[in-house]
Image 1: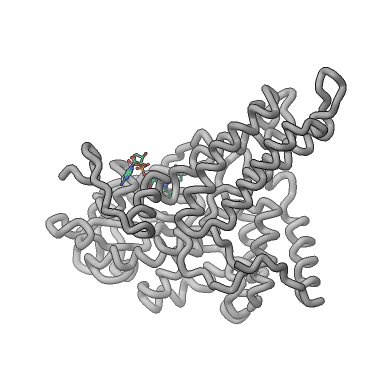
Image 2: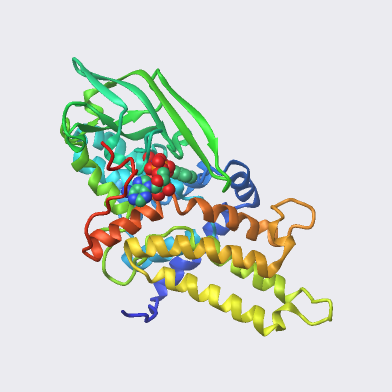
Length: 397
Ligand SMILES: Cc1cc2nc3c(=O)[nH]c(=O)nc-3n(C[C@H](O)[C@H](O)[C@H](O)COP(=O)(O)OP(=O)(O)OC[C@H]3O[C@@H](n4cnc5c(N)ncnc54)[C@H](O)[C@@H]3O)c2cc1C
């Protein structure tokens, strides 16, 4: 593995300065406050500002609404977006779905959507998880029934994050209940302003906003179908694999791990380090001069670094599990003030450690739970037999 750094050309350095200046201007305190208040993972003003510079799809040519950036500049942009804490949940889901739109949507619809998506005016969310169980994704129950040139949808989805900020959901439906479960599925791009769609907010312990979405006699034209009827499992594979880290260019400029909140853990560690440098023990010594504290902090920092360089599914599992265990240890090291939330009297470092602790818990669930990933690693990486857990709904049929 090459851990070498990249020497930037003068043009790339100028681009880095430009990105820092632009993000420094648009990532105002109001934007951060909006994110803390809503948990949306999205800010329309910021999203449109990025779109206006072609930075939502930076690799696309300028004439397609992108910025025509080379790989190094794409990486510079991605790193600065992360460093400036730009809310990117809806940006991420839109990116995941777009690749499937290009492959599987009606070409006329794709051409209509492309400039809108690039500009940030059209956004997509992921309508996979059923209320009955999100891990068993192929067990989807939301029904789509053909009616002439249209389809009629009935059912519900849980955890459709960003639905209230998106124009379409990439929806997994059941079109043939008699077929084996992977063979009776069809994907649609469903306009979220269609009559019969109802979005209800869910706020998580980690402060994120997600949604339950109800579909009652929702009529969708056949042009919004993606891929073959009953071929939904194939249509879904691209976005699912991309979410799990597949398909990233192997040029040393992509994330190695499947990102699951490592940055929030790093921010909490930095917050604890700053706190330690200005906080004294009762005997008058600085916390930052305590070798035991430094040893523990150093081990946590190393564990985040290890998560960054652990690939794909292993990285997803490691980053989440080491974040959950590590943030609890960090709270123990800092003490009672660490549990005070942003805005509470006596909160330290803007409540960064409390936020990271709450946020960490959800990272074991979304995008597929760590338990499910451990099963996939056992089966597909280690070549062990498929798990057969007595009592699991997955195998009780
Ligand atoms: C904040 C948040 C945002 C989300 N955003 C989205 C989104 O935008 N779109 C979307 O479609 N979904 C989204 N999800 C859903 C997420 O993908 C599911 O929650 C996840 O896949 C788990 O599904 P479940 O919650 O229904 O749990 P279940 O599938 O009911 O699982 C329950 C428990 O059983 C365990 N389990 C299940 N199957 C297995 C197995 N095979 N092996 C071992 N253990 C197993 C699980 O680990 C878990 O502990 C989001 C979830 C959260 C919390």
